[in-house]
Image 1: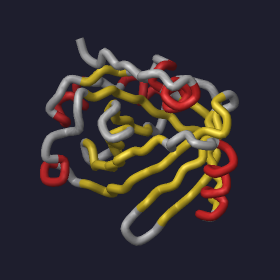
Image 2: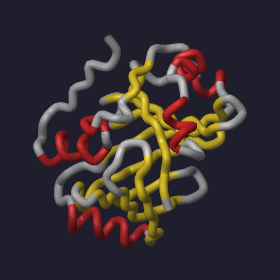
Image 3: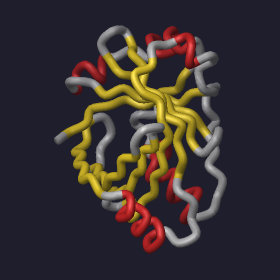
Length: 176
């Protein structure tokens, strides 16, 4: 299976997100990496009425990447967490999925309680993704955005490596 997506950095979470947008879903995520090359992450989605855990593989790439998901039990997630990351804290995400232009789902994320914010859209074709105008996101969210689709630094696996493996600060000079 392939995912075709673009990713934009935000200055902040959209204001009044709960009231200004049509929200498809809102939940919290914990994720950590058991390998960043190849890219294997372990995720836990926490919703009020259910918890979903899975292992996710993503290939190298920019707009189009191979992606596979295998669902696991919560106890298996906790075992991975205990045995594979030691005292490192999982990445946390406050995750919103919004309806965008009656055609797409826009995913908006608050990473580690404000370390940085981003949004992404999964597209149906590479051509559609390449031709998409970032100004549409800016108008919809009411803020400037920075397209980081082609910048490896902003991949979550690199955020993990910088902040958890190297214990360094992740810096974003977001929008100039």
